[in-house]
Image (tube, rainbow, N blue to C red; front, side):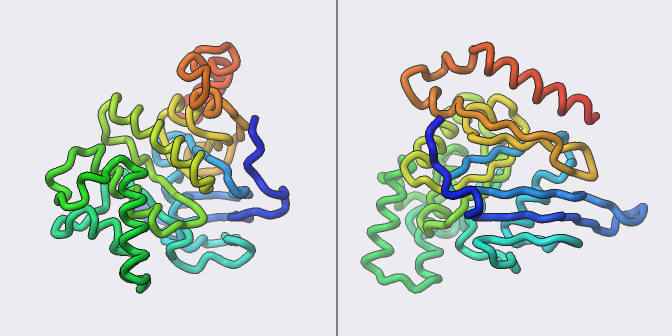
Length: 265
């Protein structure tokens, strides 16, 4: 397995004793309980678990959208107090302004941060090319397919050069072929940029194909049941490609993950 991480004490994000509770129709609901997680520079983490287990809630705490009821969420040793450009989020549905063309959507964050015009143009064109949309900058979102819209949403996040990319089931609404193409794109971008990625998915094969570490969560209240260090993504991206999906090691880990998830129902 390739080494992509820094010193093990140098974490990008740390979650310590995280609990999250909220008021529901039938009283208080505990969404997350005693979650502890350290995320290292350059990791590609995929999170799996039963529906409603708190996967997206965990992502929103890291993003700064939610504050935990108890515990600490930190980035580079500092408390996460709200959303900022250091943690870019890609949602399941593309988040594009329909009245802006793709170029203006992607460059929007840079303009808000008052980057020089020449730098905005350089970065926007570069990231549109990176996601395969260099010829679609003048198109409006409604003129693009679902997969192309998601590429544009990804470019909109990447252009700000965040320390960490958070992805909440970004391929869930795509057809199987488009989803596979997007997985390959994400893997390629991760290899080129060495970003830290935290991806929520319900697809075990997607997690195995992309992750360097897989987190499996329990049913609500969500907690981390088991972690798997994996390196299939390097083989799939390299000479072995899709044949890596059919090795005995791959199938063994896949079965173990499915058994854990199914036992939570």
